[in-house]
Image (cartoon, rainbow, N blue to C red):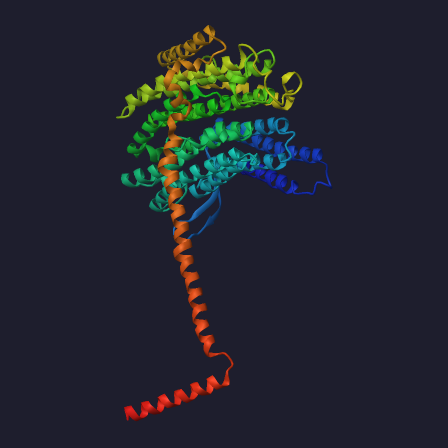
Length: 609
């Protein structure tokens, strides 16, 4: 069965390599339409086969097949060896299905969404490479192998966010995402080294079985937490995710809803015994989660850009998962990770349909789209219901599992975490209702948009609608897998709080549909819209001092280092000028100098005896 895991990793990688090489074929040999069709097949077919392999492997695991592993290559490093192989347990099999299904939906969706883009072949190839890297993270049994996939994901994220690099805002967003996540990855790599060197092996099973000192575990898991915060966009390394919405919307669905941002949560769950033995790390994770879930939810409530609403929502929902992990329940965290991957990918792809239709990201340009986009309306309604945690959508069951786990937890951070979680539920219901109402209800506001097609709208390709419909199925029904563990009291409390938040927004919208319900934030709206000015703080405390230091280094290099080099050159030129005075070709001067030298020697002999 391990062959299926290897195929799931290698098939998208092969498709990516073929797509990148095929995109280099001169255009005069093939038409642009033929090249795009070939790229679409190279993108969709390998990922579809990888999804079949992942589903088959997960089904075998579910029927009691047990964990499978293979260690074909052992690389000696002179200290701790690296085992290049795969290992698939229940957690990896489940997340592998999520990754491949969402990646397949995004590849099919992108065929229509990017049909007029001349760089579609490279775009689809980078998605395939990203999918392969994420599956390597999921199926890896060695932390170094996991780190390889972890870094390739970061590279693909940079390339895909900056796909439309001609716009400087897009390229800056890509660079910001790359730098912020790399900052966290420094700590992540040192955490891997700490665990591997202490356990004498980088194999995950060996590390979890080793009897490591508590201090070592705390230090290692704290370092790993830096990488988790970067990849999963948690405080304080979350600022890259909203800006990453500059990339194509299908990339937001793949990377920033269901896969890359879930990698950090997955790694904590994969190494959960080590984190459980390092309680101070879980306490820190709990505080980070509490601040992140509520702060991001408030920021989502104030945004006008539909994709940024979903971006801040992602940060908030990932913080809920982190809160479940801090509360000691990896099962609740993974349950919510899987359902969130389904309904958030659905929401992003639906947002892409809306944006494609009205040619604007802003909800102030939307409204009244319920009749124009009926399929998108119903599927996005399912997505918003799951996001708000309303029954019977999947998010209702998984969010209840998270809230119940946090309620039952113990520790110094538990009251703060539980309070923030309940408030976040209410704010989530509010911003989900606001986005739903402003997008699909009220008066249409798209007639004033420039560059629109016939009747102010663009036709939505069928390839964009089928993935949306298919993702609506797990977004609606996936939660029933956890119905037996439902905590009725906790579920009722969270539903009432969510409906209260949604009800306040509906009341404000009903009274004045043309006005934004976010006005209820009053003077607090501006800080929420700017995400509490954290980017400005980083700019003042980090970016500007670093730039000043860099300019100082440049000046020192120019004036001191290069100045010394230039000064030595000028000194050599000056000395050569003096020597040139004596070497002017005048024979009489040479003879005079010779006689003067002889005279000096003679005098010296006489004087010194």
